[in-house]
Image (cartoon, helix red, strand yellow):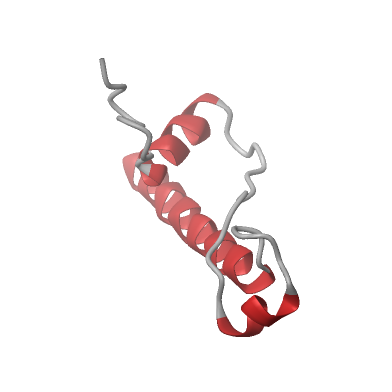
Length: 76
């Protein structure tokens, strides 16, 4: 049976953030993995742990959190 949020191994991140923000608002989140970007490939990073890729993923998470926080302001 597939879970309604994270399904068969791939997560719907914005839904996960909605759950976390509802249950435990303000809990810090961090990204674990990112894409190899720009000159990261030349730096010898392990796959998924490049600097630029993780910074891009962090920015995406922060953007989703900002949207969710704005949604909650509209509801109240």
